[in-house]
Image 1 (cartoon, rainbow, N blue to C red):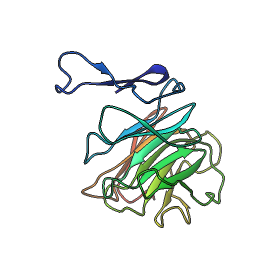
Image 2: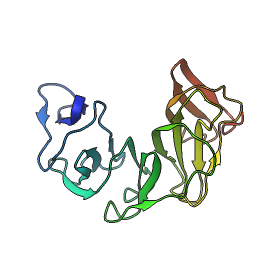
Image 3: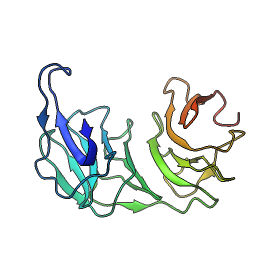
Length: 192
């Protein structure tokens, strides 16, 4: 878990008992809501970011700097743990667990400020980015070709900030988005 400004904590007893610091190897400071993601298939594999760059843990106890720049959010692919998406305005990704980072193509349409990125639960080439804005811009974007192209999948969603997205792995046309005014759902891949 994380607390404000990048304090990372660890508990190995299902949340009972004490939490220990998980800061070895980190430098810089985190943002108020520090981005981090835990690999759904390996609880020792995580990414986070501070003012000093991008950090990865592969042992659940220490961090190694694996990149420059900041991050608003991370998403490790449930399909392939070597693939991680990062968003901080533009989307970036790695296919080799942080050894190299690739900047995805520009979105190609107007967007607000990026809030979250989500690796698709069943397709390693697909990812989503959500955006915060009340303007007439995309609020959800999707790539199906590893960032080479993007499509606006906002559909008929009204103009308001989107802060998070989840995709049902059992029915990938069913998406949920968290907004400033509640949770919205689509059963048809963002059309309605």
